[in-house]
Amino acid sequence: MGELSAWCGKWLGSPPAQTLFERAHLSTVVGLRLADGREVVVKARPFEHRLAGCLEVQRRMHRAGFPCPKPLAGPEPLDGQGPLRGQVVTAEALVPGGTVLPPRPDAPELFAAALARSATAAPSAADVPSLAPAPPWNG
Image (cartoon, rainbow, N blue to C red; front, side, top):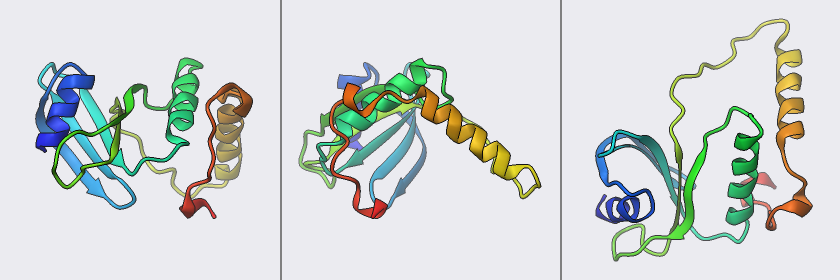
Protein backbone atom coordinates (compact mmCIF):
# COMPACT_ATOMS: atom_id res chain seq x y z
CA MET A 1 0.00 0.00 0.00
CA GLY A 2 3.02 2.27 0.42
CA GLU A 3 3.29 2.94 -3.31
CA LEU A 4 -0.41 3.76 -3.66
CA SER A 5 -0.35 5.82 -0.49
CA ALA A 6 2.41 8.03 -1.86
CA TRP A 7 0.62 8.24 -5.24
CA CYS A 8 -2.63 9.32 -3.57
CA GLY A 9 -0.82 11.97 -1.54
CA LYS A 10 0.81 13.35 -4.67
CA TRP A 11 -2.08 13.19 -7.17
CA LEU A 12 -5.16 13.37 -4.93
CA GLY A 13 -3.71 15.60 -2.19
CA SER A 14 -4.56 13.20 0.61
CA PRO A 15 -3.19 9.82 1.72
CA PRO A 16 -5.43 6.79 2.28
CA ALA A 17 -6.88 6.33 5.75
CA GLN A 18 -8.76 3.05 5.13
CA THR A 19 -8.95 0.34 2.48
CA LEU A 20 -12.58 -0.38 1.57
CA PHE A 21 -11.91 -3.22 -0.89
CA GLU A 22 -9.20 -4.61 -3.14
CA ARG A 23 -9.46 -6.79 -6.25
CA ALA A 24 -6.88 -7.88 -8.80
CA HIS A 25 -7.35 -9.55 -12.17
CA LEU A 26 -6.44 -7.58 -15.30
CA SER A 27 -5.64 -4.60 -13.08
CA THR A 28 -5.37 -3.89 -9.36
CA VAL A 29 -8.44 -2.03 -8.11
CA VAL A 30 -8.52 -0.58 -4.61
CA GLY A 31 -11.36 1.30 -2.92
CA LEU A 32 -10.01 3.81 -0.44
CA ARG A 33 -11.28 6.32 2.08
CA LEU A 34 -8.77 9.15 2.03
CA ALA A 35 -7.68 11.07 5.12
CA ASP A 36 -9.76 14.04 3.89
CA GLY A 37 -12.91 11.84 3.87
CA ARG A 38 -13.27 11.30 0.12
CA GLU A 39 -13.93 7.76 -1.10
CA VAL A 40 -12.10 6.87 -4.29
CA VAL A 41 -11.28 3.92 -6.51
CA VAL A 42 -7.65 3.65 -7.55
CA LYS A 43 -6.69 1.41 -10.47
CA ALA A 44 -3.15 0.28 -11.28
CA ARG A 45 -2.41 -1.48 -14.56
CA PRO A 46 0.26 -1.86 -17.21
CA PHE A 47 0.71 1.18 -19.45
CA GLU A 48 -1.40 1.25 -22.62
CA HIS A 49 -1.49 4.21 -25.01
CA ARG A 50 -5.31 4.08 -25.01
CA LEU A 51 -5.62 4.85 -21.28
CA ALA A 52 -5.49 8.63 -21.78
CA GLY A 53 -8.28 8.38 -24.39
CA CYS A 54 -10.39 6.11 -22.19
CA LEU A 55 -10.09 8.48 -19.24
CA GLU A 56 -11.00 11.47 -21.41
CA VAL A 57 -14.11 9.66 -22.70
CA GLN A 58 -15.12 8.90 -19.10
CA ARG A 59 -14.44 12.52 -18.06
CA ARG A 60 -16.61 13.89 -20.86
CA MET A 61 -19.40 11.39 -20.26
CA HIS A 62 -19.46 12.35 -16.58
CA ARG A 63 -19.61 16.04 -17.50
CA ALA A 64 -22.49 15.28 -19.89
CA GLY A 65 -24.48 13.82 -16.98
CA PHE A 66 -23.98 10.14 -17.71
CA PRO A 67 -23.98 8.21 -14.41
CA CYS A 68 -20.35 7.08 -14.33
CA PRO A 69 -17.59 7.73 -11.80
CA LYS A 70 -15.90 11.12 -12.04
CA PRO A 71 -12.23 10.75 -13.01
CA LEU A 72 -9.96 12.45 -10.46
CA ALA A 73 -6.38 11.76 -11.55
CA GLY A 74 -4.19 9.90 -13.99
CA PRO A 75 -3.10 8.09 -15.85
CA GLU A 76 0.15 8.74 -14.00
CA PRO A 77 3.07 6.37 -13.43
CA LEU A 78 3.56 4.75 -10.06
CA ASP A 79 6.92 5.45 -8.47
CA GLY A 80 8.57 2.98 -6.18
CA GLN A 81 10.03 -0.49 -6.08
CA GLY A 82 7.05 -2.53 -4.87
CA PRO A 83 4.85 -5.09 -6.64
CA LEU A 84 3.07 -2.40 -8.72
CA ARG A 85 6.33 -0.87 -10.00
CA GLY A 86 6.06 0.34 -13.59
CA GLN A 87 2.27 0.46 -13.60
CA VAL A 88 0.18 3.52 -14.34
CA VAL A 89 -2.55 4.60 -11.96
CA THR A 90 -5.88 6.33 -12.33
CA ALA A 91 -8.32 7.44 -9.65
CA GLU A 92 -12.03 8.11 -9.79
CA ALA A 93 -14.76 8.94 -7.31
CA LEU A 94 -16.33 5.92 -5.65
CA VAL A 95 -19.99 5.57 -6.60
CA PRO A 96 -21.59 3.49 -3.84
CA GLY A 97 -24.64 1.32 -4.17
CA GLY A 98 -26.23 0.10 -7.33
CA THR A 99 -27.96 -3.18 -8.00
CA VAL A 100 -28.00 -5.79 -10.72
CA LEU A 101 -31.13 -5.56 -12.83
CA PRO A 102 -33.14 -8.72 -12.08
CA PRO A 103 -34.68 -10.68 -14.95
CA ARG A 104 -37.86 -8.91 -16.05
CA PRO A 105 -39.84 -8.54 -19.26
CA ASP A 106 -38.78 -4.94 -19.94
CA ALA A 107 -35.05 -5.59 -19.36
CA PRO A 108 -34.13 -5.40 -23.09
CA GLU A 109 -35.77 -1.97 -23.38
CA LEU A 110 -34.04 -0.72 -20.24
CA PHE A 111 -30.63 -1.90 -21.47
CA ALA A 112 -31.29 -0.37 -24.90
CA ALA A 113 -32.20 2.96 -23.29
CA ALA A 114 -29.00 2.90 -21.21
CA LEU A 115 -26.95 2.10 -24.31
CA ALA A 116 -28.59 4.95 -26.24
CA ARG A 117 -27.92 7.33 -23.35
CA SER A 118 -24.25 6.32 -23.24
CA ALA A 119 -23.89 6.75 -27.01
CA THR A 120 -25.40 10.23 -26.77
CA ALA A 121 -23.10 11.25 -23.90
CA ALA A 122 -19.93 9.85 -25.48
CA PRO A 123 -17.65 12.20 -27.42
CA SER A 124 -16.61 11.47 -30.97
CA ALA A 125 -13.53 9.25 -31.19
CA ALA A 126 -11.95 12.03 -33.27
CA ASP A 127 -12.25 14.43 -30.29
CA VAL A 128 -10.24 12.38 -27.78
CA PRO A 129 -6.78 10.80 -27.70
CA SER A 130 -6.53 7.45 -29.47
CA LEU A 131 -8.45 4.51 -28.03
CA ALA A 132 -6.26 2.01 -29.90
CA PRO A 133 -5.35 -0.72 -29.59
CA ALA A 134 -8.42 -2.51 -28.34
CA PRO A 135 -7.81 -4.35 -25.08
CA PRO A 136 -6.99 -8.06 -25.56
CA TRP A 137 -10.11 -9.17 -23.67
CA ASN A 138 -12.22 -7.29 -26.22
CA GLY A 139 -11.16 -9.59 -29.14
